[in-house]
Amino acid sequence: MDDKVIDRNATSDSLGAHPVGTGVGAVAGGIAGAAVAGAVVGTTVGPVGTVVGAVVGAVAGGLAGHGVSSMIDPTAEDTYWRDNYSSRPYVSGGTYDDYGPAYRYGVEGYGQYEGRKFDDVESELSRDWQRARGSSSLTWEKAKHATRDSWQRVSDAVERAVPGDSDRDGK
Image (cartoon, rainbow, N blue to C red):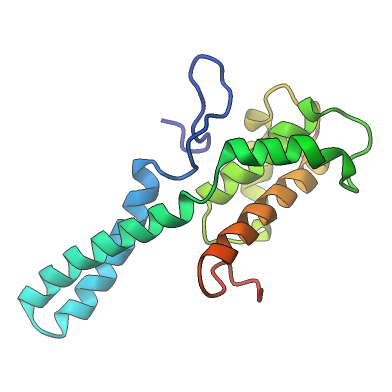
């Protein structure tokens, strides 16, 4: 499975209605990290505590990871950008058919690189834009503004729903 493309309909290549990151990879990442943390905490009370801590941590991590990623609805994001793309300052001409793939790429990228800042992964996104762009005529230099915009919108929505500064941007 190509983990850079999230929730595409195999017959139409359109973005599906399921939330980003609900796949096995997203849950496994949350479970693995939480299991390790739980095991470390459990170790302070001995070997049995290690096992119990790992199990409890894995369950909590799976739920937390699923909770954050389930907040991202690609269909709602597509609708938002379809209705609002033309008002963005970087849009100069072009249609939603050009900008839509860049917005989708930002949503998918946020799910793929969850917990990282856009600036930290821009080089990877740039490298993979040719494959992700579909029928868009935008070069990465033009698409990156829309991609960053949708990434930030998703990041802000997640942060409003999760206590604390989950993306470490000071907001």
